[in-house]
Length: 152
View (cartoon, rainbow, N blue to C red):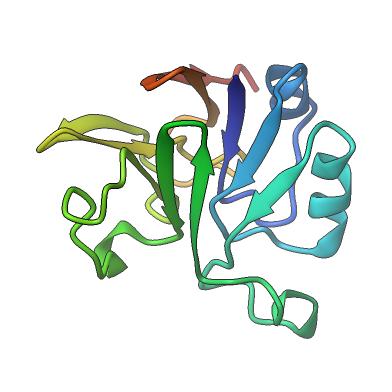
């Protein structure tokens, strides 16, 4: 299974991001979406799970949760917008992957047996940080992440 991960679009869905996410089985948006039109575009690619970011305060985002726990076969994912607001012990909770956005900084790091992943920002560039998305490859109980820097 291949899961596309995107975050921090802030209302800008780049064609390069859409192209990089083609062919995924599932999509996850880790917040700071920027409007319902972004969700509609992403839902054309694959089923979409989404969390609300700190900038998603308008009425269209009221029903979007701040955190999600998702399971794909034997692999459990925990999704939130800001990693600094992580309020669980992922290892103790049986979480395999923690997915977050917010910082716009790409992150692919294992801590205590848990994979932490931030795809970076797919929307407007912040400082000199890269623009990107990520792919999560799940095969049985194994998981592998791939950060993709977009040329924009």
